[in-house]
Length: 284
Image 1 (tube, helix red, strand yellow):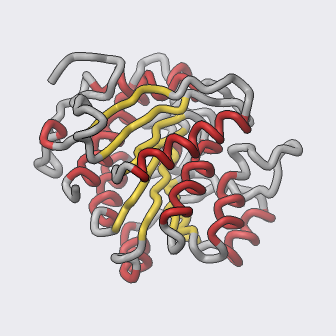
Image 2 (cartoon, rainbow, N blue to C red; image 1 turned 90 degrees about the horizontal axis):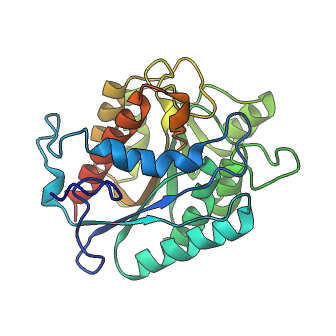
């Protein structure tokens, strides 16, 4: 492994030989509480070098997989439309080349253009969201592209009951009513997730992980911390369940590293990313 902190550890394959292509989206133009997620991708990469490439829980090694980290997109600050276009075009290219796109962010609004590109290839796509917040507002401060609206846009794109929301513990009463009608809303229960996805083994899945699904006492470095989240250990239990699915694209978003002066949040997210890479890599 080359100790190159501008790429995620062990993600040193060339683009042509890679099965998985990681890219960072350095954007936080619609953060509604505490900005700073634009610094997330670089913090994740740097923190990854404090984590081993070998996982004791899965007994897999990241160096055994072919992964290319293309770096950050270099998003124009505050320009939602241009950023979303860059994301969609990047995802489209990766899919066209027969590779799995893995996006790290960045705020949660970046998920929609990637889902849009994946849906063009997989019209029966289902999205699984691990998150603290519903993100189901139709608009927020007159901006339908806000990170608070991203899952509403996903539902509009895919149709009702094609979004599975797991671990949600915050939202307006209007979002709750919308979720009950249009999404599959699950508690933070591994068993509930296992039962729900039992019929999805041949369906293409987009997995989006907002790091605030983890309790802020363990991961304070996020823009909208919400008490009552899961532990990191439970997160790995969830991945163990999800690995049976046909995950065709994924993202990990909403690390805002500067709110955790100890740097622990970045290390936790780096390990989350490592485990996701292994989950996808062992199927390639």
